[in-house]
Length: 275
Image (cartoon, rainbow, N blue to C red):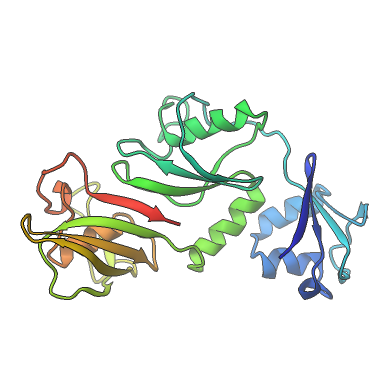
């Protein structure tokens, strides 16, 4: 467990034993996997201090040294803040996990015109507490999908979480209601997903598409309605991945008319339950 402390605009980390002998450059590039461009900004703008003095990025660190990072500075805001009730599941100095309602876009397609997305609401939330910084979206949920979604509150956290997502260190579990009763009560769908050239927003299983891996397990069956509740978790994050894969399996989501579901409800029955 890292020993940390916020100090105004700065964030302090006491160098743990496992970092001893590593340089700041190694911490940024290999421990945190921060992109070179952002690492350069921290170096060139002197945003890291070691034991109260200017950092030498090539000097090995000692256990117990005080690292201070300038993380919490005001920024030019790129999104119009908009008041709305946002359901915050977790928040600290670095991240926000929010419960996104259905029928809401995660972010604006046009930042100058759209003000009714979740990011607009979170930007207002930050500013109401005197934090004038941009929200960094780590992953996304479809407009009609509800549930837990992760955001970073500064660029360094955003970069670290982006890499964690790519390396599959961030796990997401979804609950889905599908048509039919599955023969296999658990399994993995491992077929690539690509664009459907005949439809602007639709995706499809395609041999030339990107790798996509979805695991599933049946939680409950409603034999009267011929429906099943599934738990799904992903090793990849392709657009519409769960929707495409379950439709390919012959069990489309209830309400998902784009992929063969019946309009029993007015959206696809998918909820991001755990992060």
